[in-house]
Length: 342
Image (cartoon, rainbow, N blue to C red; front, side):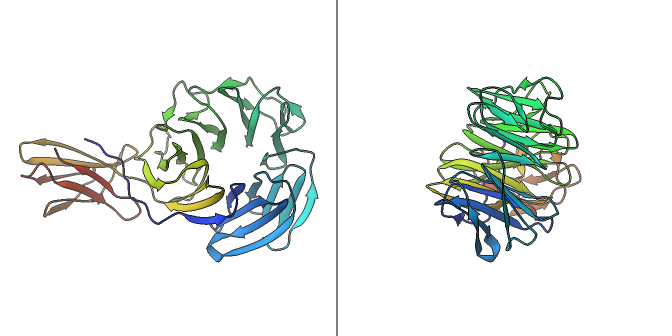
């Protein structure tokens, strides 16, 4: 019997008075925000309760980039840069509406999808990252390898199972796309399922793991992959929130999730989840604890008045006489896992 981790670290924090917010993480691991409201662009550091106006801009979600040389904000017609987040230099660009950016390359949509100087025909919600672009076409998602100027560098492919607005990350030259209920390694024949997702997002940490976050319209979830991104770990339930869109930013130990809901934007930090499984013969139960399929050593498994730590194979054996007890697995750096014996 397997049950996904459901523990959450804290309540959602409201961080912007609009759903039109974007998130980035600077090299010091600090989360930065930008948002658009009332024809004005704003910069915010949630942890410091700091908000500063940037300049005039459309009421659409901006893109915020933190690439080591400072902060860059891009939205339709407006580009802004800052070394410290306080003194912004505002310029212009030729894009319209909501924009995705990677380096100096912009992607946006009007009647067609544009990536740099190239037009790719009808579509919406394009995103671009390190040699790839993706966008929505009707009920499908297209992924296109691109050159530095946005021109095609290969054939476009259609994502299996993907629907709606895509999210894109490139890790070690491999592209991963999340769209609706699926996470896809570009070129693979299969996807990883994001159960009941109506909106989803993907990010990578410095160790090569991929994080996915998604919403079913009533709750928000997050999960981290193993290092070869062949399996997702237990989904962590971040709680009830009628989110319409989510974004995730990851470190090697945790992730922040930005969710748009109820006309505002919320932020929450989460740890990866543990998966707890059991098999038994009479009263002898062997419990297994894994992280995206990898055994977890040192996790504390508790059931009734008994407890033990998992070995290098992620297993611990305990004698249990009452089949109706709740079992928990805990380890620092992870959300807890629970199951009920039957």
